[in-house]
Length: 380
Image (tube, rainbow, N blue to C red):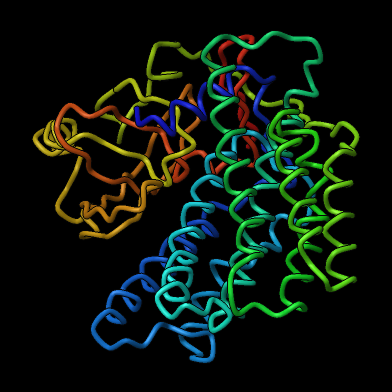
């Protein structure tokens, strides 16, 4: 399991049961962000030859940026902790796109040339960071006084440090050459809106350092409005938001027992009525993943036909790398008597861990991982 996914799993284990409430993120939305990022980075790669950075003034580029930068999905309250991996993936895509404009501005010694795109990038990054912090704090609030396991503590520290660093980078960007007072004021307003969440989530030492940095920047400025805005931001970072109510799991779901091991939770899955395999329940996988040797067994038994192959596809992982894989359509998956038909799957190398991903899980009205009873609870 990759380190990022291990961190997510550890954070989930320190929390209460995972709930898919009304604020859940649509996996199809994240898939659209993935595809838009791939297309944008392909255009940006061409810019190294032409010298023309993709700009929002180009309608085709604007469509891609709208897909990646639109954070309207986060306006409905904290998302369930089962969606934390989607937020982390989203932030990775944002960073990949924003880096293009940061590098271009530095190369031109004038970040302001790309102020429109950078403004959208910074605002979106702050919104996703805030959602990540709210997501984790909502689950921690649900178990006041509980002591997380060591792995969970380490993971939480790592995520706090990562979000603190990104928040820190946005503040540093306010000093960049070529930016107008109006541009900086707008970014500070977004930082101010997220400050109560950050004041709850970041550690006291990190918050003190951030406030000192902001106050130092404010003291160096002569523009009164901007200086006052920065001082207000520093003050807001000392005023935590009140606790957040965690999303509640939906009552009445069916409960399926899970096995726990170092890779996570495992469950028996019957594939096309022919072969039963233990899968890791992995909401971080956008589709079900089958290793090549399992696919060969299914094919040899006639449970998979040539018509079940959909072709090959390109997808982007959380580390920003492109991968190519064969796509399949599984006629049915049976988990604890709950059958889902026409499930998209991807083929992994031989002996890889089978993953029960979102192409199965998202077919249910809701699903919950109950860490106390080691159970998958699903509502149809």
